[in-house]
Structure formats: structure tokens, C-alpha cells
Length: 284
Image (cartoon, rainbow, N blue to C red; front, side, top):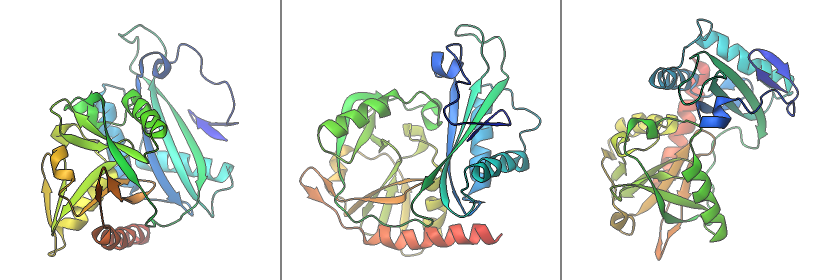
């Protein structure tokens, strides 16, 4: 079951048509959230990012869209899919309502909430081989729109196909200044000694929730120095570690880029602290 504007309907229902603006123009955004035993990981951060993104896209935010309302809508979908005692991936999609060409006739929105079971309740470290390569066919624009989770993700789609065709587990995206921005499905962090570096949002990287949480965690740890600076492709082969982050996986170590192999000690250390932050949030 999924939730369409407050109504629970079967997953395969034909509830949108060719006039949907998300389909026609990519006039939509989404939020991907991990829920464990009905506890929503970092819900306030996800909610605030969703509201900020809607404002940037000039969508009309319904008066009903409070944190409590959307939390209840999520939990209704969890319950309808019998996932109350499981881990689940939630996707909230917000589409501007039908009508108009590029210029819409309304800024009112519709929403879809989906749930899918996932395996791990807490974040775990996958130590298997994880090789990446640069994706250089297309580039990310270093602007605010690139930091949002909109439905305009064709570069991620084509990059994923490139990775599959060449037996890579992921690819790293570059902006049009040829700086490393992020992975296809998450933010990127690079470790050199005790310095942990991640691209700044002005380079066009996604404003990721796990990115934000890790920056907060690292900032409190005296053994590490966090730097938000552009990363050139040449730096990748000098790094001790590379890892990517997203709300579902948590931290994914990268083991190889071209001839360079990486360790994952810092990623392992940070993973424990990230899980502690999740547990703390669930107790609040």
C-alpha cells in the first residue's frame, strides 16, 4: 500500500496520468528516509529539508504539512505494509499539481508516500569490494538546484548505467569546474591522515542529511579535522580513505579507484558514532 494525498491505495494503482508535472517536467522533489520499528531516523532534519526545498521551488506548502501530520502519514503507510517491527525505506514524493506548460497553473501540490522493507535496522559497514570511477559524460552545475533532491536525476541514471556496463559499484560525479562533487547516490568524504574533507554545497553537492550529521559528529571529535573544500580528481589517489554516505546505507567505504586502494578505519570509527546518534535520537 502507498499513500496518495492521504488515501491508502494499492502499490500498483494507476493514480497519476500523463498530465502529472513530475512526469512531464520533473516538477517534483523527494525525500528518502529510513524508519526502524516505527522510529523515523533524523525526522526533523528530513522534514526541514523538505520544507526548505519546497520553498526554493516555489511550491505552496499546505497548512496541514506539519511535522506531526507527515509523521502520522508515514506511520500509516508503515502499518498498512506490516512493517511496524522492521526496517523500511520511505520515499515521500511531492509533485506540483497538474496543469500548464512550463508555467504551472497552480503551485498547490500532491504527495505520495511509499514504503519498502530493507534488511538492516542499524547502519553496518560493508567491507566487500567497492570500486568507483569518474563519470565524465555529463557534469553537475554548481548551484542551489543541484543541492536539492528533485526528480531531475537523469545524470544519476545515465551514470548508474555506465557503472553497470563497466562493472563499477558506483561513480563519482564532477561539476563543470571538474571538481569531485558526490557519488551517484550519496555524498563523498575523503580522509588524508586525520583530516576529513568533503565538497562544499556551493560546488553543487546534495544537501544530504547523513552529510550534515557526519559533519556535526566529526566537529565534536578532537582526533579529526573537518574541511569543507573542493576536491580535485588528482587528490583521490593521495587519500587514505574514501567513503560515501546516504540516509539508507549510512557509510559505504570505497575500496578502489583506478590503481589506488583504500582502508576503512575512519569509516568504521564514524559508523559507531553515527549509530549512537541514531539511538540517541530515538530516545529523545
